[in-house]
Length: 257
Image: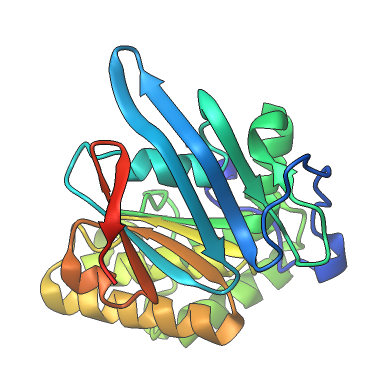
């Protein structure tokens, strides 16, 4: 995914959020994300086989499963990165708004949605290697047109909040794995997203760093009411979520809790 798709927008005014087109089968009012009958294949490989799922507003949801189970494909469909071969995926920005059917939106509309509404955290952070920590965090704000002075001030504020005040000018290569992931969290949260999608955010970390990253992510998301959809194969990471689901062979195989 490009840098423009990784992070977007200055801290948005709630009234400025994208108003999705009404959906013929809107998601439940308490669900910010909803999929019905989702199927997706890659050539002859079937990744998802008829998934139904609602993600509640403000919920931290962990999607678990072995490698190749389809859990990352499900996350990408929920985020509008991929479209399903069959079934529907809806996003409802606010309970008072109509739900947008993501597959009915064009790529430009889905990109705008990702830029304005969603934040992303990946296994290896995907920080831009030639930019300092503060420049990585300020980048999505700059892309949205925030004046550089304001964007840098907001970025430094987030880094300080995440315990990285002494590392603002360091390059990613000068940070530990845990520090780099906290920079990635700051980048994701800086735009005040409604949903954060985290794909194996602790997969490259030792157990202590993983614990610190998950404490930071869950505490900040709960404080802001941000929904988090977390893909992981690690039960210790999933334990930080409000709810766990298991994907196996492209199907929901049951609730872990």
